[in-house]
Image (tube, rainbow, N blue to C red; front, top):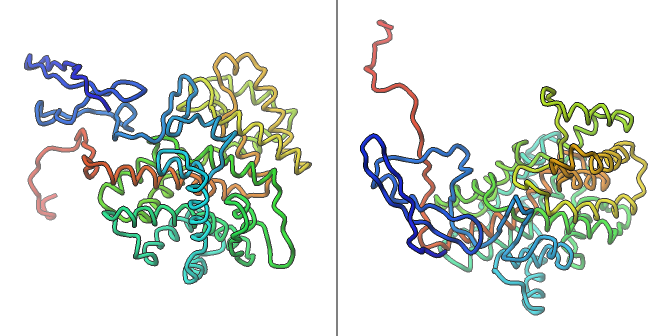
Length: 432
């Protein structure tokens, strides 16, 4: 971050006083007004609900330009990484800042593989949950409980312990996610297999049973790996900001990641692909598509096309094209006769050709395709956000690690615009 001493002047018209604040420039993206001394110099705060115009940190991990449709990790475009890399290599990139050499990748792969087992006593935790408990509730509890078992990676001031905690979280999240699914359907837990890739291992632990051999489809494993890559990190979103805020208090990394999972559970954040399937269920049949497209165009109608357009990406979601290709490959591989999937493909085709949606750049986003893929693979909708959390763990822990290693890091302490009552005198209960 450079400080060119360019300034912005703020004038308080009530007093006539003016204050100068430095403009900071990153390597790319908008300039930032440095208001760290605002309160000290003016006695005032800024008001920014949702922090949508506030840079809460300095970061070198992920860059997004929503107007240009850009998503880059450490300078590499998401399209390039999804086409040529794999999830564990992206994990290394996010954690260390550079793509690994062959030797570094082999060592990292081996390290993650050898951390996939969870402590045997953790398996008993699952029995404390009701069978119908939401998988995200289980994930929050179990991930938070990791701090009770791995005491040798809780000292956040120790660089080596921070690294071990990161490796453990990346490695164990697929195991915990798979066990969460198995518990919900009453099937035996499957142990990880060290001869499988990260995505293959997750699919194996999720869908294999002890009674017969399970062969992981390369097409499905590749699609799963791409889903993980496309969801690995997404800058300072709600769950990432939650992890950073929790981490700013010096909380242990397992507790911080559990807080991120809790934030992700909100339907406004991690539940978008579930909402896609709910929308498709409401539409019901291909013959109803014209009616629902008309409803979507009517500003007075509450119906919205879920999975189209994006809050951040005002042009197109750069992850969507990658996911679209994988989606069609998965449907071709599985040859599933499912009216809902047929409906989704027809809706995609019509919306991409409809002038209303084309002009407004309301293209299918990553959630539209990922929801279809996960349903085709056999995941219940309650597991969709769990898979999101699995993939996003590397982004969370990378952001946490970056924050902890930042020399100027302080505990998060947002301010407020107080609108409650002013000072009042206590009145005895008999006189009220």
